[in-house]
Length: 364
Ligand SMILES: Cc1cc2nc3c(=O)[nH]c(=O)nc-3n(C[C@H](O)[C@H](O)[C@H](O)COP(=O)(O)O)c2cc1C
Image (cartoon, rainbow, N blue to C red):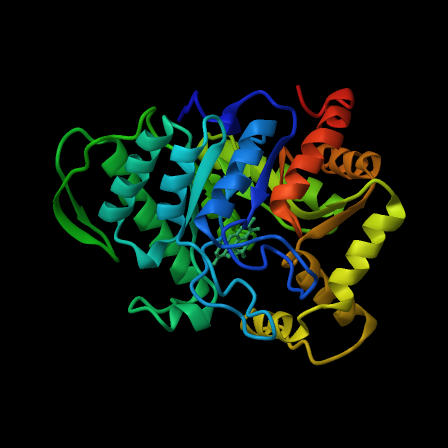
């Protein structure tokens, strides 16, 4: 399990990356003006800006259908394997990830696509394995959506199958509950053995899946103590139950401006121009009845509007670094960032936040 050319296994104290640059809306459900475009020219620009500043990774969201409302949040999104192939060719150092709903792709096809992008990138590829939860988008597909525990059982067989295809030099048969296949083989192999595997399982079953298969787990919370507890428990489970190491990372909306007042103004504008319908539709699919306007529910909805349920870091470069430091101190080894204006704000972070991160010992 080593991928020497991936910055995700590099020595940066806190890894940084972008999340969901490939989908309209990114991670914020708002009509506030923004520069993000789902055009190839713009996607390349975002990736090249990330690469130039030495960000470690770019992680696309796998989304097949939007969430309605005035913005149809995430409704316009590039497919992530083909996106990753193009981004790999357009960049030099950054780790490039494809996010795959396991039920939508046969393991034989997925293993070969992953190996292909790994070769295009020179060993910088990572696979974010998701089980699916969005019943509306899975209703478009022949595979449909299994019940939660079954999804992870399916995902386990899927990953075992892909792992064998990446590793095995001799043809093999598979005789499982979900897969039956004969004479399986896959060439070429990935560049340096198994590509990095990522999983964002957060439920008990999801955590066990990450402990067993993933090199990196994404955990989303606004509560630093929960992050610390999550990280410690997952590392312990991976080590004790599967003899493995795992990194824990999180995601956040970053709104960084020269003054706190300006950052706060942008934060407030995202909420003032919120696409509440999109957020309510998304939450309904998650089984959350968002009709109540209690203070708690309003706060919860605001988290979806701002950051797709993740936390937000809002303020000056110093304040952002302070927030990142807190996350690092609570077990997070990396932070994926969403922005209102990815291309420009990545440059702003590169110029104004990265030097302070270096001073703080978060970056080399
Ligand atoms: C950073 C991050 C990225 C994710 N990307 C996707 C995605 O692209 N597509 C998707 O359907 N789910 C995505 N998810 C959802 C997770 O795969 C997972 O279903 C969710 O975190 C709930 O955990 P559970 O499956 O253990 O219940 C993502 C979650 C996180 C935190």
